[in-house]
Image 1: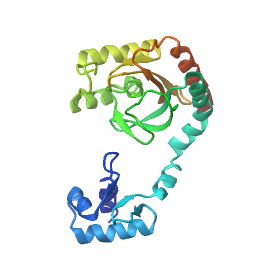
Image 2: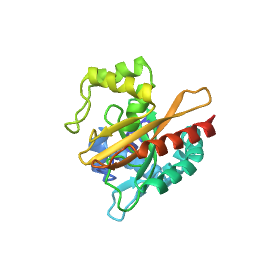
Image 3: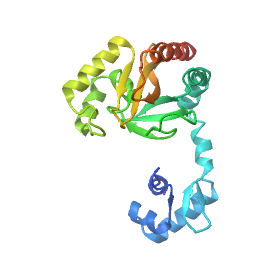
Length: 238
């Protein structure tokens, strides 16, 4: 039953945040009566919320439970003062990223009203090879992770997306050498992102932070502020 409940919950996406029981049945492959029972139970426990038209969306209780995850909660608690300082200094998109499997999971984002639109969002996922924060995590994730990413294919999102193994290995080597990465229009046209690693107690890379600006912006002035914030967060984690 628990597995079926997660099938229902995993059916919701950014593009389709609200679904009817019939749509959930088609997406999960579960019989409609089963979906009906699961939706009622999940709604009774706050994991789903029922809209006036009878469709369902993710309930706030799931967010409350997710916020208790020790890895994300502790990291976010340490990082927030530095993220806020970085946001005030740049007035752009500032993001906190961890790795979840073969994807970059964005657990926090601060964004000014006039900041350039970005693909990532808090709670959203992006490919490791195409996002600045993901590339930092991939660079320090070891050969097995890189092999898994290569085996899954390097999807192209823009003409600048890294899609060759040779180029990817070059970029990862440069990240390990320099301690940061600059990605111009790797994920969406019109944006430039810089990212740096965050290190835990033993010096291992546990997360990354990034700043996203317009593609025409010179990244050089952003890098010292980004790296200073990364060092501050890493000291806090250690």
